[in-house]
Image 1 (cartoon, rainbow, N blue to C red):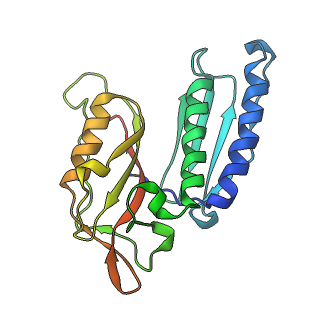
Image 2 (tube, one colour):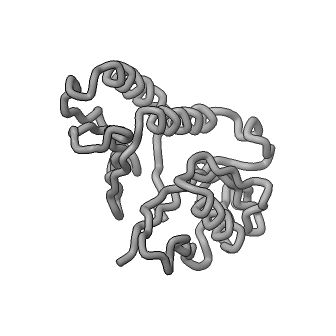
Image 3 (tube, one colour):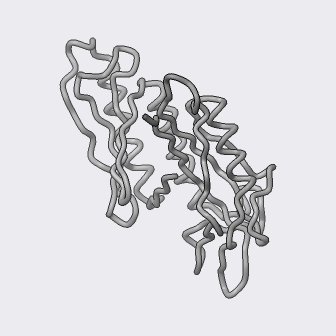
Length: 207
């Protein structure tokens, strides 16, 4: 499981700049494109970064790469222009929602992680099964979910929203893991509170 902390105040500007670059590059014929990396977006208080790159080695269908260089791990995901635009749109939406009153997100008592004195933590590590286990070929995959951890430390099923997914099997596994996980709830002002969470779930192929 991978978590990323982003500063909402800079995400919108970064997304706008990257979108303009992609729009320009997408108009060029493949042979006219040159290698590039976008300016990185800082994550985890400057300890990690996100960027978009093109090195000419991707497939015709997915020529770009979405790159995450985190504190614990780094990974890159081959993507098409359409997939990148969708992902950037999600990041921008998260940034805009994070600057709003949390009641606008559908739960008047829910707070954002950045508003807490103490973040929620799983009682035990979240265990993800790989949907391809037992098959000859396994896929790398990512799922981005939005959900709420309530004051009792559980995730209400109705609060789970899958924003991006590499497949229905991975969506189901992320939902299953979330609903079975018990958390220590977040705290603010000395009391337990409902917490809004955006979470990346990451699967890697196994030998």
